[in-house]
Image 1 (tube, helix red, strand yellow):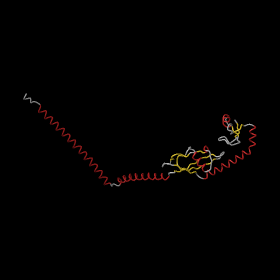
Image 2: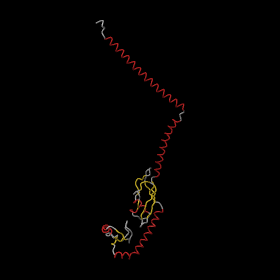
Image 3: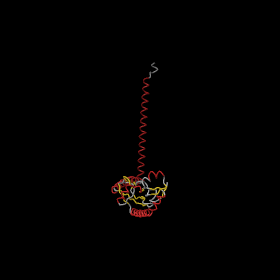
Image 4: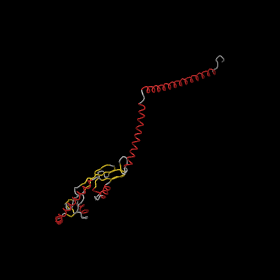
Amino acid sequence: MKVILNNDVENLGEEGDICDVAPGYARNFLLPKGLVLEHNARNIAVLEERRADIDKRKEDKRKEAAGVKERIESEPMKISMTAGTNGKLFGSVTPATIQEQLAASGIEIERKRIDISEKSLKTVGNFKVRIRLYGDEEAVLTVSVEASNAREIEKEMAKEAEQAGVEASTADAETGDEAELDPEMIAMRAAAADAEESEAADEAADEAAADNEEVTEEVTEEGASDDEETPDESDA
């Protein structure tokens, strides 16, 4: 269904444009809200009478959009939020956040015209945000997200670095102590270890011999006892 745009309509076009739309969309939404006119001879005649005024309004809107674009792109927008040592924000920067900042600078932009690729910004850093203006005009806003608690983060990172340095120094010192031993000292340590092993082996052998001796004595005593209890055949 053909209609004549009576106003600028998102995703359709500008005032005075002729567009094809679904009949249901036109009857249930566009026509009741006065956003479009039916495409017929009478309305086309009305459009032509208004053409000069429509073109003037379009030109004014384009000039205004160009001025807004220049203002948006002239300097980065700085936003401060609390963050962790890993750079992640305790929260996020959303289109609503940017809309509020722009409004504070006197620039009124609809939230739906602010496009953030990831829907929201969740880390510190510099980001490019696309803002759709009038018609095909767009502005690219640089958003600089900073940590509002930067000093606390620096102190925490310094503390972590210091702790890591202490641990590294301790490990290096232990490794260095072993590396500084001369060959003679290493040989002495090896000899001492061998002596300890030999002494342990001798002790084990002595214990085994003692156990064998005890077993032999027990067997001998049992044999003697048996001889005493056996009657002499001659006595019988």
